[in-house]
Image 1 (cartoon, rainbow, N blue to C red):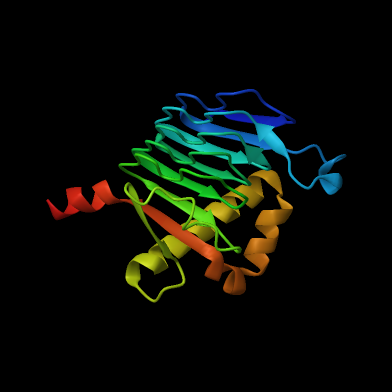
Image 2 (image 1 turned 60 degrees about the vertical axis):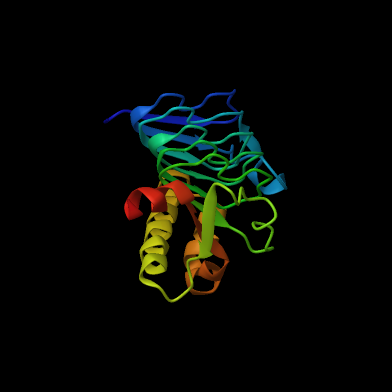
Length: 192
């Protein structure tokens, strides 16, 4: 803890692999930010096996983002396939596009997804995780809404992300599109 790595531009695979503390910030170069429809900044399996720390990525990551994450907190603006696969702890928020296999084999922690186009149900691993809108009027939803808002705030402070600013500025409307994703295994442990 205490270390801060700030990087502007693209990164290879494995960003934050085995991280155990500190903070990693990956930003899009301001000179090209306005001309991008999508921006893949980080390669595959970022946060593989991380046990702590925070990661903020102002752009897309590749496949298997947060695979086997065991305690890191992260915000990203798009992911490939198998987001939060085999995750055992920590909290990850994706505020961008996604693909199939979300939460595959996930057994702990929480993942959060922004889904204004209602694509989550067809891309989530139903046998591994449950998901629910944070706007539902339940105590758990209120807690997760607070967590997402805090993570968005941290992401904006670290990256000055336009997307994070939009979501924070329009929180009352946009929170309707956020979901929390919880491992079925977590419920089994709690029930036991």
